[in-house]
Length: 298
Ligand code: UTP
Image (cartoon, rainbow, N blue to C red; front, side, top):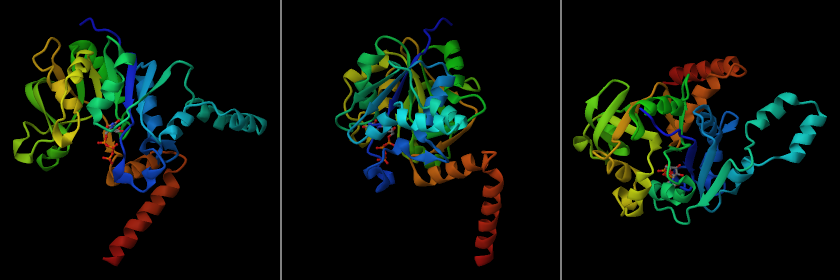
């Protein structure tokens, strides 16, 4: 199928991050670190791997640490250069953004994810775009968004990343109503935001990666508040079911960590710590010890 290339991505980072208070009183959630990289860096790396060239951040008051993170740090760089620390200079390079590749848009009130994406409408214009929620961190051999871009080239329309969840957990997610299951790609005939367990149309939950058509922005133009009193992105996408391009779920290959929750963040910290060759040995010895101590104490 002939689809327009996806080169723009929106990163909605204007939420209050209340589940991580008091830390998020002064630190944006997206700057919290998994091992030694902030959450936002994982999302940026994934977007780059998928061919994204323009990065649009929807921010809010108190997120200046995020803007600083992507800025050059001339003093730090010259100090590292003087000391011959080229490996650290390389690490810093990944955080620099080309001039003009990054844009910030303010969401003045936290009216929901749908509203945050709508705030970026003028920068997106009339082309398909990706949305990445940085608190969903996905460990995968091939970047999740890259897998989705490849699938989207076959389907067109709107595509959401989907994963199987137990029925009791469905009420925490948007859930797909499936029309046709083609394996890694499913065609949706509906989408429900945070359904009650007994009303969930399937066990396929939507997580924080999307490829959307500009039509979704038009839908958001006339959106009213949905579940939880927020303007829901799910509702605007669901309007595209049965529309020209349709809505598809994509069962990505990879492990998703919900770093917006404390338990998920801790799980990700352990998994990413163990996956690092420079830390694996020391960290796994420590984990084994602590588990043995806990067992002995029971
Ligand atoms: P969450 O539902 O995790 O909300 O938002 P939150 O405010 O970040 O965190 P908690 O629930 O209070 O702990 C999912 C994503 O949508 C963005 C968030 O920044 C996060 O990336 N978001 C949410 C906005 O940008 N604006 C909003 O009004 C709401």
